[in-house]
Length: 305
Image (tube, rainbow, N blue to C red; front, side, top):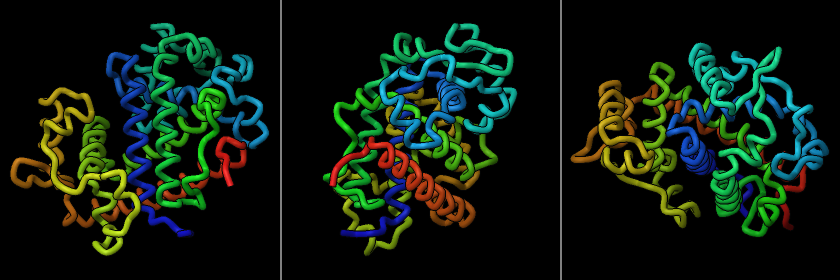
């Protein structure tokens, strides 16, 4: 069995899972991507202390099993840092979410209450969250990452570990999104989002590998992209208006992150700064996923020989 998986393969899986997570999240907030990530930032700030040790994770496996009195308020600054947005943006979104009753304000921060998770609109997207995390672990098994293989899987049914999986998964997704943003720190959040989606669709992670390694990658069974894509394809993938996507893509081409090839767009392998930052993202992604998988396995959420 292969004992080391190239960071590129794990990075591709990470980005696929994170984009699916974001897509599911925004549906219950009128397609407000930043607000949906702010909710995740508040949520992880409330409960991250629970999962510092595996025994804490095992105590609260079911969705909504962490009682409200154990949720620690998250302040605006910590949420802004975890999501990777300006503090004023985080403040505005948090105030909006509190005004709509999704968050409750306490003396030293904000809390996403238990009922908002198990009975509110968030509960309707729970299956999509869990499915994206399940696909992620299965993908890691395909490439034998971190000593995982096809026989090591998440506990089934997923609902029985849904609370712990959502807590650990949300934290991991936010770390991934923060790492992605470092690739293009000078760009607005939504432009970075379109960049990440486009690079995933064209298979940028894998195409940075030597051809001999790419050709033999077991990830090929998941059919990653390998060629330029149209603006329309990016719009369909992200569920964003076509004109919005075109506007962001023009900016990305102007700044050298993407290149136009025929009727499509591709990542720019001739931009050395961009390639170096993407390689750094792959390294961060690989390290952070190792920690994520360790937490899942040590808590008994991943099982198998």
